Image (cartoon, one colour):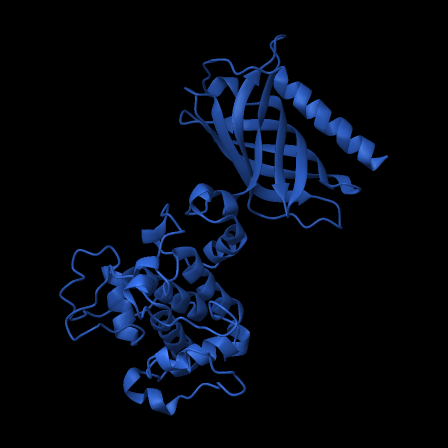
Amino acid sequence: MKRKKLLCALLAAALVCSLLPITALAYDPGDFANTSWFGQFTGTHNNDLINRYIDFTINSCDQQGNFTGSAKITSVEGQGANFDSIWYTYDFVGKIDFSTNAFSMWLDQVTGHPSNITVLQEQGYEGVIQQSANGELRMVGTYYDSRVKDLPFSASRTSAWARESMTEANIAGLIPDTLKDADMTRPITRAEFTAVAVKLYESLTGAPAPSASAPFADIAANPNKGDIEKAFSLNIAVGLSATEFAPDDAINREQLATMLCRVVKKYRFADWNLASDSQYVLDTSDVALFADDADISAFAKPSVYYMAKMGIIQGVTDVLFAPKNITSEQEAQGYATATREQAIILALRIYQQADQLK
């Protein structure tokens, strides 16, 4: 019976959408205030298909198209035999573009829902006003979790395998502003990963990182200059020399592991700094050496093996770590580098293990 109900709902949704051509209607605030509407929205939640049918009332609308209202939702969600029909009510706020008929609205406050349903506080809907042949007006569009909708990356520029973790990283505050809308499949630079490391430190501690000037002559025009200075102040990042940071170079895997390990140390031990680093030894016992251990720089070995022990970063194979490019061919292939999405997800793994780090 439930399977039949879902099929009927899906067919009805398809039929309604096919009968509702978009028309170039001109609206003003008076067309919205104190009016009742029917809305129909499709989307996904936890990989489940959702069809939501909403009866709602718009209570107020200003000249800029900002409106408020209340709604009752009937939601059919699930996959296969595992779906159900639920309902709840909520207050909402939204905005209408009078010139295009496009609108968006999002959850303000849940006023009632079934006891077995957990309602996210950041749900929303977007779509367009459509008019059927008989003049009936409806709001038709898409359901979304606004935390996902507002991700600072494009799905088309992020690998499919990474999108869920990247969503979590965004919610955790680990994606720097300078990487918003960037191609996440490209290698991450030293400057970009330094910004990720600072974001990780701030998310772990819940406090902004202190800042101080850094002596690097090559960061003045870099958009991540502020985070490089913060990381230098925290002793998380250092230059290739006293005056060179090489911000646009791709960061290699041993550098990445080292910087992440410094974030962990600074989070665990407030007094830690590079000068006292030898006093703060992290447990790397019972970790098998990588076959290319000889290629791992001495300064990076403790960090590489600690990250491996914690399950943060693994080898490129079961036995090879690939700490840095050794040959020109490896350099050309980006053998020992990480992409932006890979690097951000490594930071996410540390954030998710925060309770185990202290």
